[in-house]
Image (cartoon, rainbow, N blue to C red):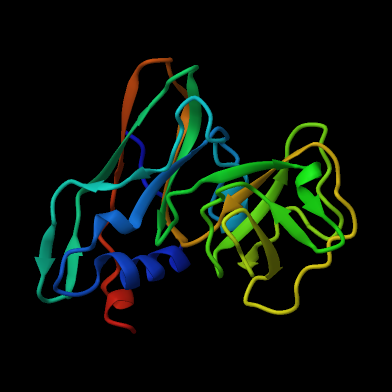
Length: 235
């Protein structure tokens, strides 16, 4: 079973959104995502993890985290201690392969949406994705598929925010708000608008890739460590 790995920042954030207070955490706010790489680690950013997340093919989707129980409330440290979280994935239409699993708090169920250079309008700066499901303020980053080049004005590994959305298109602004990003050309090929809402509170890396065969399911678990009480108490 893999061991969860945490940075001080992630532990601090975990204390704020996951463990703190009398009420048990709402597991529906936490989703487990998968990436087929072993290169992600403590120094990587949210953008790095999201950029490597599996594409929504062969039935891949972010899975709602299931806590093993409501946990045990520690009245001294004022926190919930939860032994493990788990999530189930299944493959359909082909296999799924991953080596890293990561837990995102306050995430969106959407992992990514695809679009092409023909969906980019440099005149209006709007990106068209039919029924995209994003809302104003959602955080996105963009990646280019193999042999594709991102539209001019859109930088890889940079988080943007959705603005002036309709059901089928939207503008993007810098993360935190500001003027609309000026898209200077359509780029070429196929791109992914990847949801970057939330924060990562835990991850685990397998020693070798795991393959979920077509038509089969897989249940994944991450043990959760007991937090330093100093973070929970605000010191």
